[in-house]
Image (cartoon, rainbow, N blue to C red; front, side, top):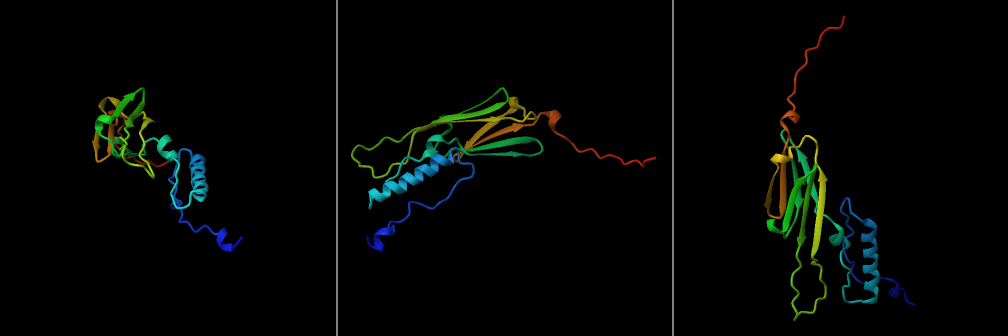
Length: 167
C-alpha cells in the first residue's frame, strides 16, 4: 500500500464547530463519525445522515430582565405566527409548534436533503416576580418575543439607609 492511499484526499465534511449546550452532543459526534465513515465508502458524493440536532432540538432562547419586565426571545426561522402556539400556565411559558416540510419535487433526484419537518416544544419556568396575566407576545423576522411585566410588588425601588453611629 502506498502512502498516498493512507491520506484522505477528500475535502472535510465541515468545520468542527459546536454550539454551546448541544442537547445530545454524543449523538452529534456519532453522526459526524458516521458521515466520515460513509464518505470513505462513497467517494465523490457527499453522504450525510439527517442532522440529529434538527430532530431533537427546541428553539434557542434568550432571557433578559430589566427593571420592570422579563423578555424571552425564541429563534423560529422560517415560521409564521400561525405555526406557533404560546401559552402561560401554572408558572410556565410554553412555546410549541411545527415546522412543515416542503413538498418534494417528484421530478428531482435529491443528492442531499436537510430540510426536515419537525414539531418543537419548549417550556420555561417563570420567575415568581413575573405577572403572567399581563404577558404579551410578538413575532418579527423569525424571532418570537414574549414580554412579561413584573408584578408591582416585585419592582424594587432602592431606599437609601441612614448610617447611625454605634454606641
